[in-house]
Image 1 (cartoon, rainbow, N blue to C red):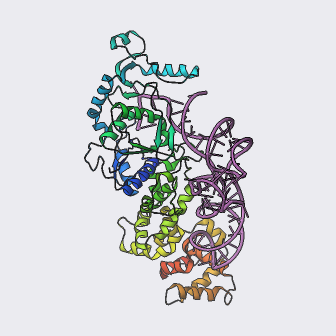
Image 2: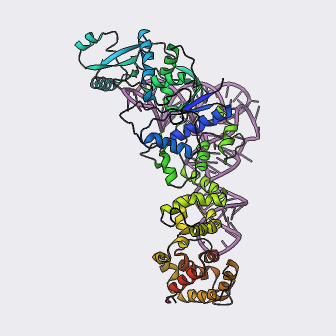
Image 3: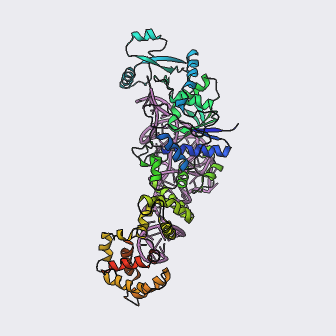
Length: 487
RNA sequence: GGCCCCGUCGUCUAGCGGCCUAGGACGCUGCCCUCUCACGGCAGUAGCGCGAGUUCGAAUCUCGUCGGGGCUACCA
């Protein structure tokens, strides 16, 4: 038997980081087993449906390299893969369950159900549907209050419903006894519980990997598999990603709950994948920096944690810096360019001169970045239009004020340099400013020059920066800082 | 409230009865490198929630307790 796994996002807004998390573990196991990974869109909630969401799911998962074998966009033997297009598929099973006495119609209004629930809570008794409609015909029910015109279909949960199952990650698990869950809504759409069971069976899903939040509804699914006479799939309930306050990760409390946030912030997909893998999983070797391939090769459900991990951005940033430094120079440039374009520092498309300037600076900025979004600040002094170059006033006040003589001395030294390279520049400046010249310490001598030429107190190494900037621009900036007019 | 899941440094984790005076990583602190900032190197900081029990021996097993989380929808 080949294993088949699926991830089933519901298109309701920005793709959730949990979708990527589930996809990663699903895929790791599927690839290890040579099985299939299916993307199914669970759009049965027309109230929360967002038409732009589905494409965003595709984009973000592909960005992460978590690609699927079958799905709405690429088809497959069990198409369609969108539940809204499978309404006719679910119908016969509802009828079958009704005929077998496992399900019944319910005409209760939402208002009555809500009042019932509130009353139950007030009386501190377990909440659950009171079966007002069970055993009644439509006519009989219409006599009573709280009657709705359109019926829903509910499961008739038996007293001996199975509340126990084996989980790949947790072992033997108990779950609560459900109440009479709705299977078919008044709008004709199935609920998740019906759709997931029918689709998982029809699509040959062998392993159901989902969040821990689903443990409590698993008995409903078990019942449906049994009633329909289908084999149960294997279940793996993943721990839930948490906010810092330990609650289930949410877009409201945590910007990192949105997958697109990571792209915006300049994270590398390989770093995010590694980090997500680290949350709840560890390689037998204990190595923490690993690729998807390594994770997949050694994958073992029993090594997945049961504790919901807090999403710690510090560690992700460290990992991101690590992957950034490992990038080949041309790849580093390729990934950095969009962020420079967004900052308006280079054109789109990039000119040959700009491309060359960035390439020349790679060595200097690559070890200094943790996020791609940091590139504009590090490279601004080099890429900015000379007319638009400005010295940060705070930095100028701190390091440049009263140091015109230092700048002037450096200017004179540098103007005499014929071979505009790091080493000759260093020699000329150090002769003029250090012990043999003005007698300054290296620290004191270079601070004003850094501000004068790069515009701030934090920058790549100075002589290298001079070399990259070129003779004309360097001299012009020194001249301006020394209070001299341009020639 | 009820039911269910979970509980090792601040965070991610290793550990599956003796190898643990609990190991690694991130963070933080200090030192080294150094023209700033990084990178890199070295050192340090900090944890088995609590209480019983089982056992020659418990972070590891059992029970209780406390704590956190999830579910309790015609949302997924």
